[in-house]
View 1 (cartoon, rainbow, N blue to C red):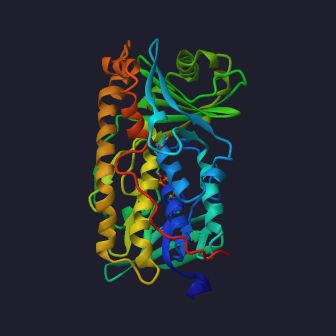
View 2: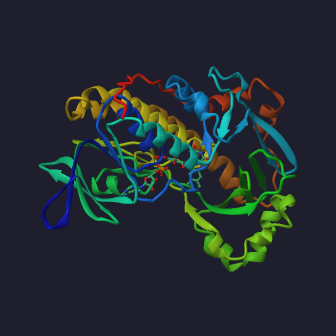
View 3: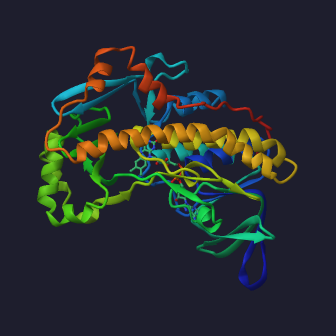
Amino acid sequence: MHQGTVGVERVNTRCCIVGGGPAGMMLAYLLARAGVDVLVLEKHADFLRDFRGDTIHPSTLELMYELRLLEEFLQRPHDEVRQLNGWIGESLLRLGDFTHLPTHCKFIAFMPQWDFLSFLAEQARRYRSFGLLMNTEATDLLVEDGLVTGVRAKSAQGQLEIRAGLTIAADGRHSVIRQKAGLEIIDLGAPMDVLWMRISRAESDASITLGRIDAGKFLVMLNRRTYWQCAFVIAKGSYEKLRASGLPAFRAHLAELAPFLRDRVEEIADWEQIKLLTVVVDRLKRWWRPGLLCIGDAAHAMSPVGGVGINLAIQDAVAAANILAGPLRTRAANDDELAGVQGRREFPTRATQRMQIAVQNNVIKRVLGSTHIKAPWILKLVDRWPLLQRIPARLIGMGFRPEHVKTPDAQSLR
Ligand SMILES: Cc1cc2nc3c(=O)[nH]c(=O)nc-3n(C[C@H](O)[C@H](O)[C@H](O)COP(=O)(O)OP(=O)(O)OC[C@H]3O[C@@H](n4cnc5c(N)ncnc54)[C@H](O)[C@@H]3O)c2cc1C
C-alpha cells in the first residue's frame, strides 16, 4: 500500500473481490491457490454474520475433496443430515434422501457459516498472493472510459482506492457494487420475509434441523448446539401487523409450532431480539461490464427456499476461477471471459430460481394464507416412495450443472 493525495491509501491488485461471503471467499481461495494476486474487502470485522443458514451441501463437500481439504474440514464441529424430514400439520414426512448421491459425502453438513468462512480464510492465508481487509467497505467504483478499474472503500484507518485488473462484486443480495455499475435487475418477487431469532437449546432436544409447517405458520430451526437459530416465515409486508398484535401472541405462534419450546419462548422478551430479513429473488440481465463481474447473490439473489443459495454462490466461484484464473495470472480478464462465466452459470441459476418461485407460489403463499393445513398429495407420494426422495436430494444436494475444480495449486505458499 502507499499513501496517495489527501490521505487516500492506494492499493494495486490483479483482482479485487468485494464481499467475504461464500462466493467471495471461495473465489479468493481458488485464485490465490492458482497464484493470482487477489484482495478481498469485507465490510464487517468478523465472519459472525448469522443470517445465511448453515448448510454445506454435498457438492461443496465434493469440492473440498477435490481440493484435498475434506478430512481437515470435517474435523470442525458439524452435524450430518442424510435425510430431509419436515412436519406438515400432524404428519412427519421424509422429503429427501441424500444417501444415494454420487459424491464422497452423502449428507448435508450443518456448520455455522462463520466456521466455514474462517476455514476458507485460513486455507487462503497460506498463499502469498492472498489478501483480506476486514472492516473495509467498498463504497463506489473507479471507472475510466467505461472500464471498471477498481473500487473506493472506507475502513477505520481512512479512505482507500483499490486499483484492480478485475473487480468482483460478491457483496450479496443488497449489492452496492452492482447498483453503482448500473446493471439491469430482473425482479422475480418473493411473497415472504423471515424473522430470525435465537432460543436456547436443551440437551434433551432433538439434534436435527427441523422444519415445521402449520396453518398460516412456517418455522425452520437450525441446531447451533447451545441455541436454536429460528427462522419464522411471514407474509411479505406483514411484520408491522404481527408486531401490533404483541409479543405474547407471537410467542404463542412459536410454541404452537414447536411445543417443546413452550417453556423457553419467554426468552424472546423484546422485538429487538428479532431481526427482520427481507427475502429478495432477482437476477441481473448481464452479470458483467468491462472490468467487473458479479457472482453469487450479487448476480442472482436467492430465496431461502431449499437452502441452496450458498451452494450456488460457491458453484459460481468455482466456475469463475476455472475460466479466469489462467488469464488473470498474466493480464486483466477480457469481456469474452467475463461473459463466459455468465454463460456457464446462467442455466443453473434460472433453473434453481424457477424451482424456488414454484415452491414460493404453490407452497409458502398457500401455507401463509391458510387456516388449516393438509400435506399435499405430491409430498405424501415422495414420503411413501424412497426412490422419489432421491430427486429433491439431488436438486438440493448437488444442484444443476455441478462444477469441478480445474485450477492448479501453484504452491506459492507463504
Ligand atoms: C433468511 C435467509 C436464510 C437463508 N438460508 C439459507 C440456507 O440455509 N442455505 C443456503 O444455501 N442459502 C440460504 N440462504 C441464501 C444464502 O444466504 C445466499 O444465497 C448466500 O449467502 C449468497 O452468498 P454470497 O457470498 O453471494 O453473499 P452473502 O452471503 O450475502 O455475502 C456477502 C458478503 O459481502 C459483504 N459486503 C456487503 N456489502 C459490502 C461492501 N460494500 N463492502 C465490503 N463487503 C460487503 C457482507 O458483509 C457479506 O459478508 C438464505 C437467505 C436468507 C435471506
